[in-house]
Length: 486
Image (tube, rainbow, N blue to C red; front, side, top):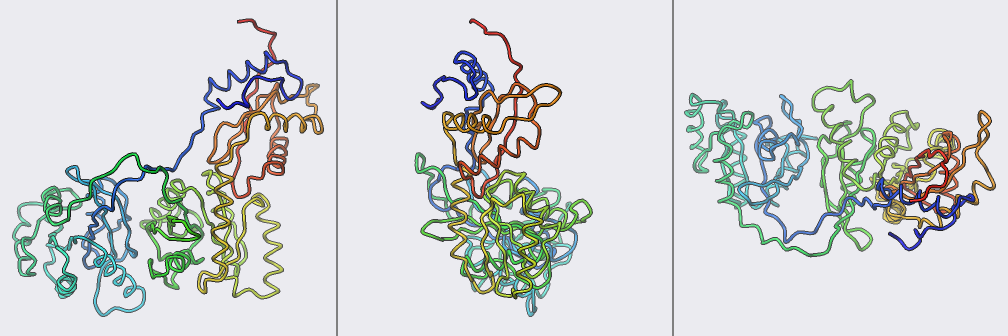
């Protein structure tokens, strides 16, 4: 209990005993518990990294899902679904390691396929060990042999995986892969789980031991920021510019990113974890295959994040799709920053109409910090960190109960609730139920209309700030009772 929670006369003339009773009820219902989220205890040193590589459509993402024991990577029965290198945390036989899923590697390709192949090569360079996945039903192809040459040059330990061996009849197909010169091929079925345990045992032998974990270190960790928006607004370009490298595939084709991609980035003297997400298309329930699952993973990434940076393309009118994405972030209770991208392309006429669109369509999020940026050129990216810090500080804000009730007393005295049906509900007192985002519970003698609750929210923002954070105001109706003696 905070010292300001000492029972005191209520904000609207309620007596000390009744006010103390309401405080007791609030405590019983858990409204004073500070439900902090997000922070994860810092572990020991870095975990070993396992890269899963191979040509397109050999089952790499299916194998990654099998290693993780859950459907994490987007899988579809056609080549080219995975494009970026995506990292997951895994555990086998009591040892923890990171698994990096990659796009299909091909030789002599151009455009987006070349970018995908480059991402796979980056993954190999950063890995401690590699699983090369080969389709045993097809056998070793020229592309597989080219991947083997790439792996030999890297000098990394390689475990050869012969995938799609669904039964004893396929064992001969796996044996033929000895010709690749990588040692014993491990026959598995990533789809059904056959042989994956033996494969992982071999992987653990190839990987270096993880450093011992340490406990009792500093809590918390990098703040987790989701980059969200509709397809082709520049999310991946922004992540690459912030990271200072081609971390994710960027292409003119909309919908390049399928899986959420994490990257630790040093900005403003601190480390942030930025998550590039798949663009959210117009109607999720009408999507099919990889795009449908990518949209679900984007929504999950927003839920896991602490703040969302919603990118809007200033060269196009603000759409219903944009407002729906913003609402998704607000409904998830995340801190919010609006990044107006491609600002360097804006002319005076478009700027005039954009300001009118913002006033008309984004009135519900006037409280969100706004940054005008260019992910392509890096213009004004330095403004992103102060905006995020402001939003996250608001997201963590707690208003002392005494200050809150003094504010409510002034508000109700100056602007009482309208009389409805001959009755005028009163706010008896309020308390902050928690943070991340700030949640307030008002105990009242009757139902408070939605318009009056919105009025209270606006005044809360005017008094206490909350720039960049949604706030939630709920009402508990407590019918007035006679004085009780315990």
